[in-house]
Image 1 (cartoon, rainbow, N blue to C red):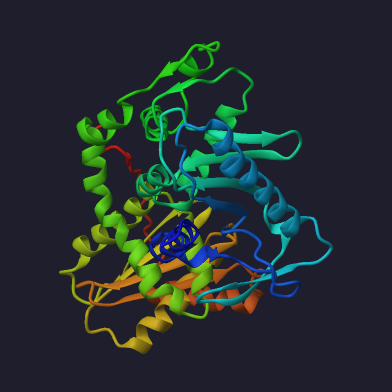
Image 2 (cartoon, one colour; image 1 turned 180 degrees about the vertical axis):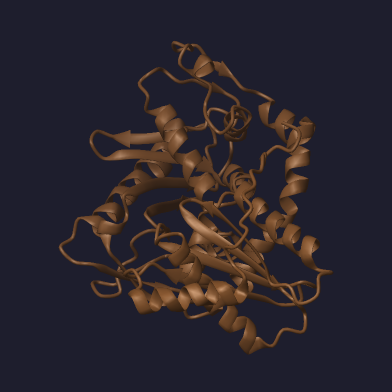
Length: 393
């Protein structure tokens, strides 16, 4: 197999197996224009556009050749792709393997990340980035490091936050010489509460920054990291629900986008609350239990209900609940996401309510009557939860 085919296979493997699948466009083409390939991989999620170039060249001790074959060529392609996507006087249509034709509105994307992934030989003094004056920074990461990176930062917000922090670090104006690998840099970032320690990097003054073995200490020896990863396991239920159930619904993309905005810790918190409500009320006959809280400016409403509840009854209940909560929170939220489940967790339901104009007087009377019928908002209990990403922090 030639190197080009190996790189192509990596793109498709990544697009199919990563948590970014629904938002990945492998080898996108200008479907409404000249149908030329725009880049190797495009990732579009909410307001973020990640443009990816894949290169497969070995270093073999030749810095000049590596610079031309990987860095210069990839940089040129990435800038060209960005011009195509954002500087034409028309929208671009691209094709997703599952979703079909998707039109790109350049006004949506306020965050642009340019990324070169090299699949060739990894060596310690691997260039971390490239930039041409006035054209924006390009992250350069080796495939093996990137594969581990997206395993550790396995939500879109966490990946995006790291890449921007990395970009800010490398473009901050001070000389930067790293002794170590990309993963050592990632470990330094993670151990400093997802930021780069200014005491280490800003005071280097051109002297090498030794981060060797930081990743080994973080990945293999840190007890807090092991405990965090163990606690995170429940949170992957959210990812599975999105892929297996939610994205199959006509409105599923809206709910999925909000759930995928959540960090891994937030997803763990969400599942923790579902399990907590189930455990608290599962032996109380006929109870429809509710709990709500805010994440990322969205109100999440959890509803658990008896196993023998008829489908029509729970569908109506969830629809009523979303409308009532929008009204009772004074239309504060643009969206309310409802997650429902039977007490034995054998069935789950989902819903989303978007803010509309306030109800008229007749509508408010109806919603007040629903509250009375259901016994809602009668004796509300507020509770504060101290939830930590690292359980023993």
